[in-house]
Every structure is written in structure tokens, then in C-alpha cells.
Image (cartoon, rainbow over all chains, first blue to last red; front, side):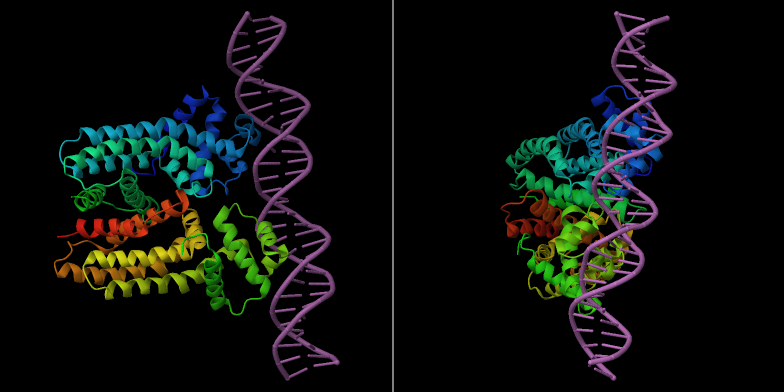
Length: 218
Length: 218
DNA sequence: CGATTTTGTGAGTAAGCACTCACTATCATG
DNA sequence: CATGATAGTGAGTGCTTACTCACAAAATCG
């Protein structure tokens, strides 16, 4: 799924919020949906509650009835998604990494493919995170705790095995993760924000995974 | 120079704007300085003209006397810097690449070192660009024209030579640039925004340059 | 069914926003 | 020194902002 088809992303975010907050009143659902898209398109600070209300077909007061403040609205979108979507998504990536037969390059490539599909599926949310992270320290901590920590713990073990078997030169997991993530996010931004068009995901991933695997051979 | 010491960055931006606009009235200088820092810290949309005026020790009307609108203020900060700083900086990087003796890895490493020092020197501006690029299409075009175009033209030639001499597998310049830039920007963000602290630039650059060079051997 | 809670809103409100304008002070220059 | 241009501002302007509140409709439930 390429970004542009947003219905699945919206549905998934709604499900995540519903799991955190209980059954959602209909207008509350509409607000979540509208806010997600507005924030992704315009950025948090430049989005007015009025425009969210208008897009949701709802009175402005309804937003504040359900979410209290605009800042809370953002957090209550992002937090459940981090907990319900990103973390299990990472577990899935870990399983792929552990189960894939073959060399390190194939493992990395499959992991990247899964992560890229994930970013496409939740494109509006990824966009919001990319935009708000530099100015919103609260999101900082959220990601650090729920995502990076667990991923590094897993990578520590997985990479340790590869190193022990002489297939990988010694490299700390955070460094490995940073470089992999940088390349992947850089590719995602190029493909879906800077120059949308025809991209050959398979070839690009093969290149990046090959770089990592061959470049890190002992 | 690590980010945090901003005096040089401010001075360089002032010089660039002065070159574009002629001698700057004292309060105009103060506005540029304050706006640069405010935008970098809080983001463009979340920064009020009032807060800029306050920080500059200037009446709010002075901002509009000199810059007309808030959007113009941003552009007239960024544009001259792109023209006067980034482009010559790239020429410098190209010279380093062309002149460095030794293998491809050493060339890439020296180029990366220069670009990293550059990003540190103009940290507030880099921060503004990173924050505003996703929501400001005008900056998009600015960067595309003044930076990426020229750099790709140069890389096309430089990489072509390496490929012809059998030191590099065939790779299109945009793809090479994207991967190099992703890793470098990712490192810069990690080091100066996510987890400031002790980082060994030399070792990190050696790792990234080594990855690229070894991973792209024929 | 009656009581209570939940959901939703129109009509505010005070503060903040980008921006204007009439006016003064400063300046270079003929 | 007179003159026109430039630099600077206090006091607004109308509009938008996030947010409140009294009140009504609907759903929930003993």
C-alpha cells in the first residue's frame, strides 16, 4: 500500500484510540479522523481547532468536550498508536529477522520491506511524528520509551549472534539501528514527500541492505 | 564547532542577508538575529511576531517595516543563506572530493566531515529547514534549485570517473547522494537533537564512509 | 418510566494574532 | 541649514485563536 490511500491508516488509528479510550462517540471518531489528516497536512501548530471541527462536520465545542485541549488531542492520537501499532509492528519485524533463512542481507532486506510497508500504511501518522518531533519534547520521550528501547534490546541479541558467528564485524546496536533507520527514513521521505512518482522499492531496498551487509562484513 | 555556540551562525546569516539586501539598519539586524533563533527553537508557525520583536528589543511594527510579512521574513532569512552559504559550501566539498588523494572511502569521509562542520556552524538554519520543509513547498523548490541540482551534476561526473576506473559499481548519482545525505543527516539529528552528548565524529564518519565505499565496490 | 449520565452545540469570551498607520527621530546630502 | 528619505514606534485594527458555558437532545439504566 502506497501512501495516498488513507482509509486504512485512518481505520487503524481509530481502532488504536478506541482500544485506549473505550467505545468512541460518533462525533469523537469524526474529530480524530479530521485531526489526523489536518495535522499531517499542515502541521500541528498551523492547524486550527476550527478547521478540524469544520472538516469533521462538528461544532468546535465538541472537540473540547472530548479532548479538553488541542495539545491533548495530539497526544491522544499519537500515544495509542505508538503503543498498539508501532510496538507490535516492531515485534513483527523482529520475527521476520529471526525467521528469515539465508544471509544477513536477506534478513535486513525483509525487515526493511516490512517497515516501509508499515510507514506507508500509517503515512499521516508518520508525517505528524516527523514534523512534531523537533519541537515537541513530549513525543521524544514517548518514542524513546515505546520504540527505540525495545528495538535496541532485540538488535543487541540478534547482532550479537551474527558477530559471534563471524558474519558481522562488531558494531553497537544503536549505531546499526541509527544507520539503518536513517537510510530507510531518508528513502521514505524522498519517495513519498520530496519526489513522489515511480520508485522501485525492491531495488532500493536491495541496495540499502546490500550496503549494510557487505559494508559490515568482518 | 559543535552546535550550541551560535554566535558564528548568527554572524554568517547576517552577512549573507546583508549581501542580498545591502547595509542593514541596526534594528533590522536585531530582527534577523531574533527571528533566526525563535524559528529554530519553536518552529515558524508557533513563533509570534510579538515574541520576535520582544527578543530583538524592537517594536513589532519594525518587523513589518523591514520585512512586510512574517512569511517574507522567513524567506529572506533562508534564501540568501542558500545562495551564499550552502552553494559555496558544496563547491568546497566538491573540491575536497576532487583533491583528496587516496581511495574513495577517504574522499567520502573528508566530504562528510566538511558537510558536518557546515551543519554545526549553521545549526539554527539547518533546524529551520528540517522543520519547515515538510509544510513549506516554497522552501522545497529553493533547495531543489540551489543545492541538489548542482550537487548531482557534480556527483555524476565524479562518480562516473570512479566507475570507469573500476573502483565503484554503477550507481546513479541521485541514489548515491540520497543515501549519503540520509546517513549524514540522520547522524546530525541523533547527535545534536535527539541525544546530545559525547559523540566520536571521526569514528562515526569512518563507519558511514566505509559502508558506502566497501558496500559499493564492484 | 423517571433519573442520571453522556453527547452535542450555539453563542459567547478574553487573549493573541499578523498587520496598519499616523507620526517622530535620525540621517545623508545638495 | 533646509530637504527628502530612511528608520523606528505606540497605539491601534479587525480577525482568529483556543477555550467556556448554559442548555438541549439522546442514550443508559434501575
